[in-house]
Length: 377
Ligand SMILES: Cc1cc2nc3c(=O)[nH]c(=O)nc-3n(C[C@H](O)[C@H](O)[C@H](O)COP(=O)(O)OP(=O)(O)OC[C@H]3O[C@@H](n4cnc5c(N)ncnc54)[C@H](O)[C@@H]3O)c2cc1C
Image (cartoon, rainbow, N blue to C red):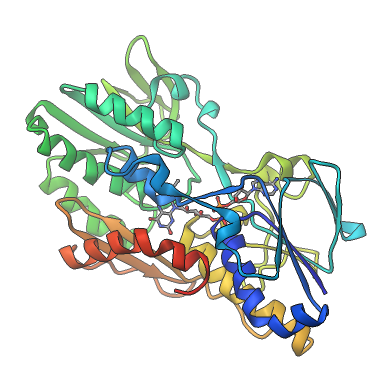
Protein backbone atom coordinates (compact mmCIF):
# COMPACT_ATOMS: atom_id res chain seq x y z
CA UNK A 1 0.00 0.00 0.00
CA UNK A 2 1.39 3.39 -1.03
CA UNK A 3 0.69 6.09 1.58
CA UNK A 4 1.34 9.64 0.39
CA UNK A 5 1.38 12.45 2.99
CA UNK A 6 1.27 16.04 1.75
CA UNK A 7 2.69 18.43 4.36
CA UNK A 8 5.47 17.97 6.90
CA UNK A 9 4.14 20.16 9.68
CA UNK A 10 2.74 19.01 13.00
CA UNK A 11 0.00 16.76 11.65
CA UNK A 12 1.91 15.24 8.72
CA UNK A 13 5.06 14.56 10.76
CA UNK A 14 3.27 12.93 13.70
CA UNK A 15 1.21 10.80 11.32
CA UNK A 16 4.20 9.68 9.23
CA UNK A 17 6.17 8.66 12.34
CA UNK A 18 3.16 6.96 13.92
CA UNK A 19 2.64 4.92 10.74
CA UNK A 20 6.33 4.09 10.36
CA UNK A 21 6.32 2.53 13.83
CA UNK A 22 3.05 0.67 13.34
CA UNK A 23 4.05 -0.63 9.91
CA UNK A 24 7.71 -1.58 10.52
CA UNK A 25 7.32 -5.15 9.15
CA UNK A 26 5.23 -3.99 6.18
CA UNK A 27 7.78 -1.27 5.32
CA UNK A 28 10.61 -3.85 5.50
CA UNK A 29 8.79 -6.36 3.30
CA UNK A 30 7.74 -3.70 0.78
CA UNK A 31 4.02 -4.27 1.50
CA UNK A 32 3.72 -0.60 2.59
CA UNK A 33 5.51 2.55 1.52
CA UNK A 34 5.29 5.99 3.18
CA UNK A 35 6.18 9.08 1.13
CA UNK A 36 6.00 12.68 2.33
CA UNK A 37 5.99 15.79 0.16
CA UNK A 38 6.58 19.05 1.96
CA UNK A 39 7.25 22.68 1.11
CA UNK A 40 10.26 23.42 3.31
CA UNK A 41 13.35 21.53 4.47
CA UNK A 42 12.93 23.23 7.87
CA UNK A 43 10.17 22.43 10.38
CA UNK A 44 9.02 25.36 12.49
CA UNK A 45 7.66 25.18 16.04
CA UNK A 46 4.99 27.79 15.40
CA UNK A 47 3.83 28.40 19.01
CA UNK A 48 7.34 29.78 19.62
CA UNK A 49 6.43 32.81 17.47
CA UNK A 50 4.44 34.15 20.42
CA UNK A 51 7.67 34.37 22.44
CA UNK A 52 9.71 35.64 19.48
CA UNK A 53 7.45 38.70 19.31
CA UNK A 54 8.64 39.60 22.85
CA UNK A 55 12.30 38.75 22.23
CA UNK A 56 12.12 35.78 24.61
CA UNK A 57 13.47 33.36 21.99
CA UNK A 58 15.50 33.86 18.82
CA UNK A 59 14.37 32.62 15.37
CA UNK A 60 16.95 29.80 15.15
CA UNK A 61 15.44 28.20 18.28
CA UNK A 62 12.19 27.58 16.38
CA UNK A 63 13.53 25.33 13.62
CA UNK A 64 14.83 21.80 13.03
CA UNK A 65 15.60 19.98 9.79
CA UNK A 66 12.48 18.14 8.67
CA UNK A 67 14.53 15.07 7.69
CA UNK A 68 15.92 14.78 11.25
CA UNK A 69 12.38 14.43 12.66
CA UNK A 70 11.32 11.46 10.55
CA UNK A 71 11.61 7.75 11.37
CA UNK A 72 13.72 5.64 9.02
CA UNK A 73 11.58 4.17 6.26
CA UNK A 74 9.80 7.44 5.38
CA UNK A 75 10.79 8.86 1.99
CA UNK A 76 10.89 12.67 2.10
CA UNK A 77 10.71 15.04 -0.86
CA UNK A 78 11.02 18.79 -0.30
CA UNK A 79 8.89 19.36 -3.36
CA UNK A 80 5.44 20.93 -2.88
CA UNK A 81 2.34 19.28 -4.30
CA UNK A 82 0.87 21.25 -7.18
CA UNK A 83 -1.76 19.12 -8.89
CA UNK A 84 -4.17 16.71 -7.21
CA UNK A 85 -5.54 14.13 -9.67
CA UNK A 86 -7.83 12.37 -7.21
CA UNK A 87 -9.66 10.28 -9.82
CA UNK A 88 -6.31 8.83 -10.95
CA UNK A 89 -4.89 8.47 -7.40
CA UNK A 90 -1.97 10.72 -8.33
CA UNK A 91 -0.35 13.94 -7.13
CA UNK A 92 2.02 16.00 -9.26
CA UNK A 93 4.73 18.06 -7.60
CA UNK A 94 6.29 21.40 -8.39
CA UNK A 95 9.40 19.74 -9.84
CA UNK A 96 7.19 17.78 -12.25
CA UNK A 97 7.28 14.36 -10.56
CA UNK A 98 4.15 12.20 -10.40
CA UNK A 99 3.37 10.33 -7.18
CA UNK A 100 0.87 7.41 -7.18
CA UNK A 101 -0.95 6.53 -3.99
CA UNK A 102 -3.43 4.11 -2.48
CA UNK A 103 -4.03 6.40 0.51
CA UNK A 104 -3.54 10.17 0.37
CA UNK A 105 -3.37 12.41 3.46
CA UNK A 106 -3.46 16.19 3.08
CA UNK A 107 -1.93 18.12 5.99
CA UNK A 108 -0.87 21.41 4.41
CA UNK A 109 -1.96 23.65 7.30
CA UNK A 110 -3.27 27.21 6.98
CA UNK A 111 -1.89 30.68 6.28
CA UNK A 112 -2.64 34.16 7.61
CA UNK A 113 -4.23 36.48 5.03
CA UNK A 114 -3.99 40.03 6.46
CA UNK A 115 -4.37 41.34 2.89
CA UNK A 116 -8.13 40.63 3.13
CA UNK A 117 -8.48 43.74 5.33
CA UNK A 118 -7.43 47.04 3.70
CA UNK A 119 -4.56 48.61 5.63
CA UNK A 120 -3.99 45.70 8.04
CA UNK A 121 -0.69 44.38 6.69
CA UNK A 122 0.77 47.91 6.42
CA UNK A 123 -0.41 49.34 9.74
CA UNK A 124 -0.84 46.32 12.02
CA UNK A 125 1.67 44.19 13.89
CA UNK A 126 1.32 40.42 14.08
CA UNK A 127 3.25 37.36 15.21
CA UNK A 128 2.07 34.65 12.80
CA UNK A 129 5.27 34.42 10.73
CA UNK A 130 8.95 34.80 11.63
CA UNK A 131 9.16 38.06 9.70
CA UNK A 132 6.08 39.67 11.30
CA UNK A 133 7.00 38.48 14.80
CA UNK A 134 10.43 40.18 14.54
CA UNK A 135 8.76 43.32 13.17
CA UNK A 136 6.33 43.27 16.10
CA UNK A 137 9.22 42.86 18.57
CA UNK A 138 10.85 46.01 17.17
CA UNK A 139 7.56 47.94 17.20
CA UNK A 140 7.00 46.98 20.84
CA UNK A 141 10.48 48.09 21.80
CA UNK A 142 9.95 51.48 20.14
CA UNK A 143 6.53 51.98 21.76
CA UNK A 144 6.55 54.41 24.68
CA UNK A 145 2.85 54.57 25.51
CA UNK A 146 -0.62 55.06 24.06
CA UNK A 147 -3.58 52.98 23.01
CA UNK A 148 -2.84 49.38 21.99
CA UNK A 149 -5.74 47.66 20.25
CA UNK A 150 -5.88 43.89 19.77
CA UNK A 151 -8.04 42.85 16.82
CA UNK A 152 -8.66 39.56 15.07
CA UNK A 153 -10.07 37.88 12.04
CA UNK A 154 -11.68 34.46 11.81
CA UNK A 155 -10.95 31.69 11.41
CA UNK A 156 -7.41 31.74 12.77
CA UNK A 157 -5.05 29.08 14.05
CA UNK A 158 -4.32 28.82 17.77
CA UNK A 159 -7.66 29.66 19.41
CA UNK A 160 -5.97 30.95 22.57
CA UNK A 161 -3.54 33.31 20.82
CA UNK A 162 -5.79 36.41 21.16
CA UNK A 163 -6.02 35.93 24.94
CA UNK A 164 -2.38 34.93 25.37
CA UNK A 165 -1.01 37.88 23.41
CA UNK A 166 -3.15 40.27 25.47
CA UNK A 167 -2.00 38.89 28.83
CA UNK A 168 1.60 38.88 27.59
CA UNK A 169 1.33 42.49 26.41
CA UNK A 170 0.09 43.46 29.88
CA UNK A 171 3.14 41.80 31.47
CA UNK A 172 5.53 43.21 28.88
CA UNK A 173 4.49 46.83 29.50
CA UNK A 174 4.46 46.23 33.25
CA UNK A 175 8.02 44.87 33.15
CA UNK A 176 9.08 47.95 31.18
CA UNK A 177 7.46 50.14 33.85
CA UNK A 178 5.09 51.84 31.37
CA UNK A 179 1.86 49.89 31.94
CA UNK A 180 0.25 53.06 33.36
CA UNK A 181 0.99 54.83 30.05
CA UNK A 182 -0.62 52.08 27.96
CA UNK A 183 -4.30 51.48 27.41
CA UNK A 184 -4.87 47.86 26.35
CA UNK A 185 -8.10 47.47 24.37
CA UNK A 186 -9.23 43.96 23.32
CA UNK A 187 -11.74 43.51 20.50
CA UNK A 188 -13.50 40.27 19.52
CA UNK A 189 -15.85 39.42 16.64
CA UNK A 190 -18.67 37.80 18.64
CA UNK A 191 -20.64 38.91 21.70
CA UNK A 192 -18.11 37.66 24.29
CA UNK A 193 -14.31 37.64 24.70
CA UNK A 194 -13.74 34.12 23.31
CA UNK A 195 -15.53 31.69 21.03
CA UNK A 196 -15.52 28.96 23.71
CA UNK A 197 -18.10 30.04 26.26
CA UNK A 198 -16.36 28.74 29.38
CA UNK A 199 -13.03 30.22 28.27
CA UNK A 200 -14.81 33.57 27.79
CA UNK A 201 -16.34 33.29 31.27
CA UNK A 202 -12.90 32.71 32.73
CA UNK A 203 -11.08 35.39 30.72
CA UNK A 204 -13.52 38.33 31.04
CA UNK A 205 -12.96 38.91 34.80
CA UNK A 206 -9.19 38.44 34.30
CA UNK A 207 -9.21 41.28 31.74
CA UNK A 208 -11.29 43.38 34.13
CA UNK A 209 -8.85 42.77 36.97
CA UNK A 210 -5.87 43.81 34.82
CA UNK A 211 -7.57 46.97 33.55
CA UNK A 212 -7.87 45.69 29.96
CA UNK A 213 -10.90 47.22 28.22
CA UNK A 214 -13.06 45.08 25.97
CA UNK A 215 -15.18 45.70 22.89
CA UNK A 216 -17.15 42.70 21.56
CA UNK A 217 -19.06 42.34 18.27
CA UNK A 218 -16.15 44.04 16.51
CA UNK A 219 -15.35 42.53 13.09
CA UNK A 220 -12.44 44.43 11.62
CA UNK A 221 -13.28 45.85 8.17
CA UNK A 222 -10.58 48.43 7.50
CA UNK A 223 -7.49 50.00 9.04
CA UNK A 224 -7.11 53.73 8.36
CA UNK A 225 -3.41 54.19 8.97
CA UNK A 226 -3.43 57.98 8.53
CA UNK A 227 -6.28 58.62 10.96
CA UNK A 228 -5.05 55.74 13.21
CA UNK A 229 -8.56 54.37 13.26
CA UNK A 230 -10.03 50.85 13.05
CA UNK A 231 -13.41 50.48 11.39
CA UNK A 232 -15.69 47.51 11.99
CA UNK A 233 -18.29 45.70 9.89
CA UNK A 234 -20.76 46.75 12.59
CA UNK A 235 -20.17 50.43 11.76
CA UNK A 236 -18.19 51.27 14.89
CA UNK A 237 -14.73 52.89 15.02
CA UNK A 238 -11.93 52.67 17.53
CA UNK A 239 -8.64 54.63 17.57
CA UNK A 240 -5.22 53.01 18.00
CA UNK A 241 -1.60 53.98 18.43
CA UNK A 242 -0.37 50.40 18.09
CA UNK A 243 -2.43 47.67 16.42
CA UNK A 244 -1.73 44.03 17.28
CA UNK A 245 -3.64 41.61 15.08
CA UNK A 246 -4.42 37.95 14.75
CA UNK A 247 -5.21 37.89 11.01
CA UNK A 248 -7.91 35.72 9.47
CA UNK A 249 -6.59 32.50 7.93
CA UNK A 250 -7.27 30.45 4.84
CA UNK A 251 -6.12 27.00 3.76
CA UNK A 252 -3.39 26.69 1.14
CA UNK A 253 -4.04 28.30 -2.25
CA UNK A 254 -2.99 25.12 -4.06
CA UNK A 255 -6.02 23.33 -2.60
CA UNK A 256 -8.35 26.05 -3.83
CA UNK A 257 -6.75 25.97 -7.28
CA UNK A 258 -7.36 22.22 -7.40
CA UNK A 259 -10.97 22.79 -6.27
CA UNK A 260 -10.52 20.59 -3.20
CA UNK A 261 -12.37 23.01 -0.92
CA UNK A 262 -13.52 26.62 -0.75
CA UNK A 263 -10.98 28.82 1.01
CA UNK A 264 -8.51 25.92 0.98
CA UNK A 265 -10.53 24.11 3.66
CA UNK A 266 -11.13 20.47 2.78
CA UNK A 267 -14.64 19.16 3.48
CA UNK A 268 -13.75 16.46 6.01
CA UNK A 269 -15.74 13.81 7.88
CA UNK A 270 -15.45 14.82 11.53
CA UNK A 271 -15.05 11.23 12.83
CA UNK A 272 -13.23 9.27 10.10
CA UNK A 273 -11.28 12.29 8.74
CA UNK A 274 -11.78 11.26 5.11
CA UNK A 275 -12.47 13.93 2.53
CA UNK A 276 -16.23 13.95 1.92
CA UNK A 277 -17.04 11.69 -1.05
CA UNK A 278 -13.58 10.03 -1.08
CA UNK A 279 -12.68 6.84 0.78
CA UNK A 280 -8.90 6.93 0.27
CA UNK A 281 -8.24 10.69 0.76
CA UNK A 282 -7.91 12.08 4.28
CA UNK A 283 -7.27 15.51 5.79
CA UNK A 284 -5.84 16.40 9.20
CA UNK A 285 -4.80 19.56 11.03
CA UNK A 286 -5.65 23.13 10.11
CA UNK A 287 -6.73 22.32 6.56
CA UNK A 288 -9.94 20.49 7.47
CA UNK A 289 -13.25 22.33 7.51
CA UNK A 290 -14.21 20.67 10.81
CA UNK A 291 -15.56 23.46 13.05
CA UNK A 292 -13.07 22.91 15.88
CA UNK A 293 -9.91 24.73 16.96
CA UNK A 294 -7.10 24.98 14.44
CA UNK A 295 -4.40 23.91 16.88
CA UNK A 296 -1.32 21.73 17.01
CA UNK A 297 -3.04 19.46 19.51
CA UNK A 298 -5.97 18.97 17.11
CA UNK A 299 -3.50 17.97 14.37
CA UNK A 300 -1.72 15.68 16.86
CA UNK A 301 -4.84 13.84 18.08
CA UNK A 302 -6.20 13.52 14.54
CA UNK A 303 -2.85 12.13 13.36
CA UNK A 304 -2.91 9.48 16.10
CA UNK A 305 -6.42 8.35 15.15
CA UNK A 306 -5.63 8.31 11.45
CA UNK A 307 -2.34 6.46 12.02
CA UNK A 308 -4.18 3.73 13.90
CA UNK A 309 -6.89 3.58 11.23
CA UNK A 310 -4.58 3.40 8.20
CA UNK A 311 -2.51 0.68 9.91
CA UNK A 312 -5.74 -1.19 10.72
CA UNK A 313 -6.91 -0.85 7.11
CA UNK A 314 -3.70 -2.61 6.05
CA UNK A 315 -3.65 -5.24 8.79
CA UNK A 316 -7.38 -5.82 9.42
CA UNK A 317 -9.07 -4.45 6.33
CA UNK A 318 -11.03 -1.67 8.09
CA UNK A 319 -10.52 1.40 10.32
CA UNK A 320 -10.97 0.92 14.05
CA UNK A 321 -11.41 4.35 15.67
CA UNK A 322 -13.34 7.60 15.43
CA UNK A 323 -11.81 11.02 16.15
CA UNK A 324 -13.81 12.44 19.07
CA UNK A 325 -12.92 16.12 18.54
CA UNK A 326 -10.28 16.15 21.31
CA UNK A 327 -8.32 19.42 21.64
CA UNK A 328 -5.90 20.51 24.39
CA UNK A 329 -4.67 24.10 24.54
CA UNK A 330 -2.46 25.80 27.08
CA UNK A 331 -3.41 29.41 27.87
CA UNK A 332 -0.60 31.74 28.97
CA UNK A 333 -2.36 34.00 31.49
CA UNK A 334 0.42 36.46 32.36
CA UNK A 335 2.66 36.84 35.43
CA UNK A 336 4.23 33.44 34.58
CA UNK A 337 0.93 31.71 35.17
CA UNK A 338 -1.02 29.55 32.74
CA UNK A 339 -4.08 27.37 32.56
CA UNK A 340 -5.43 25.02 29.88
CA UNK A 341 -8.57 24.11 28.00
CA UNK A 342 -9.33 20.49 27.15
CA UNK A 343 -12.48 19.62 25.23
CA UNK A 344 -14.04 17.42 22.56
CA UNK A 345 -17.20 17.25 20.45
CA UNK A 346 -19.32 16.43 23.49
CA UNK A 347 -17.55 18.03 26.44
CA UNK A 348 -16.87 21.79 26.62
CA UNK A 349 -13.66 23.13 28.24
CA UNK A 350 -13.65 24.15 31.89
CA UNK A 351 -10.50 26.25 32.50
CA UNK A 352 -9.22 26.34 36.09
CA UNK A 353 -7.54 29.32 37.75
CA UNK A 354 -4.03 29.77 36.25
CA UNK A 355 -1.01 28.47 38.15
CA UNK A 356 2.76 28.75 37.87
CA UNK A 357 2.98 24.95 37.56
CA UNK A 358 0.97 24.94 34.30
CA UNK A 359 3.11 27.80 32.98
CA UNK A 360 6.29 25.83 33.64
CA UNK A 361 4.73 22.77 32.06
CA UNK A 362 3.99 24.80 28.92
CA UNK A 363 7.54 26.17 28.94
CA UNK A 364 8.87 22.62 29.19
CA UNK A 365 6.53 21.53 26.38
CA UNK A 366 8.04 24.20 24.13
CA UNK A 367 11.26 22.14 24.32
CA UNK A 368 9.55 18.74 24.39
CA UNK A 369 7.71 19.59 21.17
CA UNK A 370 10.45 17.98 19.11
CA UNK A 371 9.84 14.68 20.88
CA UNK A 372 6.12 15.17 20.35
CA UNK A 373 6.62 15.80 16.60
CA UNK A 374 8.36 12.45 16.43
CA UNK A 375 5.21 10.99 17.95
CA UNK A 376 6.96 9.87 21.15
CA UNK A 377 4.96 12.09 23.56
C1 LIG B 1 1.79 32.12 16.89
C2 LIG B 1 1.21 30.74 16.96
C3 LIG B 1 0.97 30.17 18.19
C4 LIG B 1 0.42 28.90 18.27
N1 LIG B 1 0.24 28.34 19.51
C5 LIG B 1 -0.27 27.09 19.60
C6 LIG B 1 -0.41 26.47 20.88
O1 LIG B 1 -0.04 27.04 21.92
N2 LIG B 1 -0.96 25.23 20.91
C7 LIG B 1 -1.38 24.58 19.78
O2 LIG B 1 -1.87 23.45 19.88
N3 LIG B 1 -1.24 25.15 18.56
C8 LIG B 1 -0.70 26.37 18.44
N4 LIG B 1 -0.54 26.94 17.20
C9 LIG B 1 -1.14 26.32 16.02
C10 LIG B 1 -0.35 25.18 15.41
O3 LIG B 1 0.99 25.56 15.16
C11 LIG B 1 -1.03 24.74 14.13
O4 LIG B 1 -2.41 24.54 14.37
C12 LIG B 1 -0.41 23.42 13.63
O5 LIG B 1 0.93 23.65 13.24
C13 LIG B 1 -1.22 22.82 12.50
O6 LIG B 1 -0.59 21.67 12.02
P1 LIG B 1 -0.75 21.26 10.49
O7 LIG B 1 0.03 20.01 10.34
O8 LIG B 1 -2.16 21.29 10.11
O9 LIG B 1 -0.07 22.45 9.68
P2 LIG B 1 1.43 23.01 9.75
O10 LIG B 1 2.11 22.58 11.00
O11 LIG B 1 1.35 24.45 9.46
O12 LIG B 1 2.16 22.26 8.55
C14 LIG B 1 1.80 22.46 7.22
C15 LIG B 1 2.88 21.82 6.36
O13 LIG B 1 2.46 21.77 5.01
C16 LIG B 1 3.54 22.10 4.18
N5 LIG B 1 3.00 22.53 2.89
C17 LIG B 1 2.35 23.69 2.60
N6 LIG B 1 2.00 23.68 1.30
C18 LIG B 1 2.40 22.50 0.78
C19 LIG B 1 2.32 21.90 -0.52
N7 LIG B 1 1.75 22.51 -1.55
N8 LIG B 1 2.86 20.67 -0.69
C20 LIG B 1 3.45 20.01 0.34
N9 LIG B 1 3.54 20.54 1.58
C21 LIG B 1 3.03 21.77 1.78
C22 LIG B 1 4.30 23.16 4.96
O14 LIG B 1 5.64 23.27 4.51
C23 LIG B 1 4.21 22.57 6.37
O15 LIG B 1 5.25 21.66 6.58
C24 LIG B 1 0.07 28.21 17.08
C25 LIG B 1 0.34 28.76 15.83
C26 LIG B 1 0.91 30.03 15.76
C27 LIG B 1 1.22 30.62 14.42
